[in-house]
Amino acid sequence: MPANSFSRRVLAWWRRHGRKDLPWQRRPDPYRVWVSEIMLQQTQVGTVIGYFDRFMERFPTLERLAAGSEDEVLELWTGLGYYARARNLHRAARLALERHGCLPPDLDALTALPGIGRSTAGAILALAHGEPATILDGNVKRVLARHAGVDGWPGTPAVMRRLWALAEGRTPPRQAGPYAQAMMDLGATLCTRASPGCAACPVAGDCVALREGRQTDWPAPKPRKSLPERQTWMLLLHDDQGAVLLQRRPPSGVWGGLWSLPEAAGTAEADTLARALVGRSPTQWRALEPIRHTFTHFRLHIHPLVGRVHGPATAGVKDAVQVWYKPGQPPPGGMPAPVVSLLDGPDGP
DNA sequence: AAGTCGGGGCA
DNA sequence: TGCCCAGACTT
Image 1: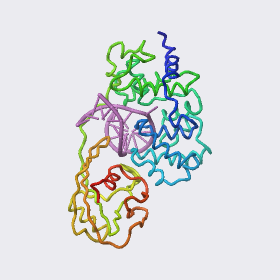
Image 2: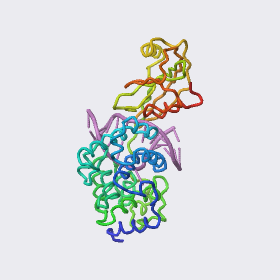
Image 3: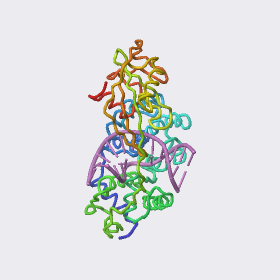
Image 4: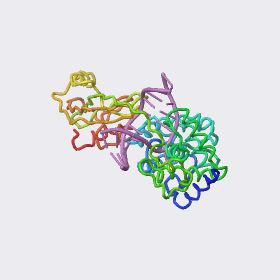
């Protein structure tokens, strides 16, 4: 089977079996494609759809996004994770308007914007502009690594170079948009990680992995190390009105820019911190069941401590770094998922 | 080249 | 339970 028919077979398959009704496919303008691509980084389609619809309702255009505040953007991002994506999206919207008056339609200008790399830029060009651009996301990597038998973990530059060369070599001069979509659909629905549906695959005829019966050997997994464990004590200080004290986290790092609970390194430190924050420590602490939260690179054990403080009537008062937040009210911005569950949970304060 | 950055889906 | 996912950025 000739190699140059790869894209033809993929396209023919997509026309029959591919996805064409996702929210960002209905009106695939550059802005909508961009937002969807950022949300879809490290996040699955089913999870993204609800976030995308809410985001588009609030920020339907690039101009509206640029005019919004970072807190609003982070609030809409709460629960999606990788919050640097949201901060970069917001910054890039303002930069794009400033530099180009729109989302620029060329690869170099796109990749110069924060949060847009080579693959996302290629997606915008192919899907929204119909240009013969190339994407290389997790799905495409998996399809190509199996079909061509590309050894090695794709996290290394050498393997990435090989995969990019393959990806670009197979991108057709026309129909690059449908082809990009088709490759992602192929990886997401057929050439899946655990049990690929090779019987229905349009490129099974010359697939190295299928021929050798080693589909799940590619792509090679990331070398794993054991996860470090960390502990933190989160303070749920609430006043007479039931408001809880939230603090804004530093602009970068874990949960950057999000509103979270004050944290201490232990129970003794919690007492000291409470005095520093509200001038007195609670008459007594109540420890809730610990929460385990796993990040990419460490595991966090959260020990929640509830304490009532008879402070001044400060509920609702917000400044740049702290706010007394009443659960059920509109949030002051984005919040980490475990904090949301602590404030909403039946076991909460 | 290695580390950082969340949360959820799924076997 | 562990692995991975429509990656990009920092050091």
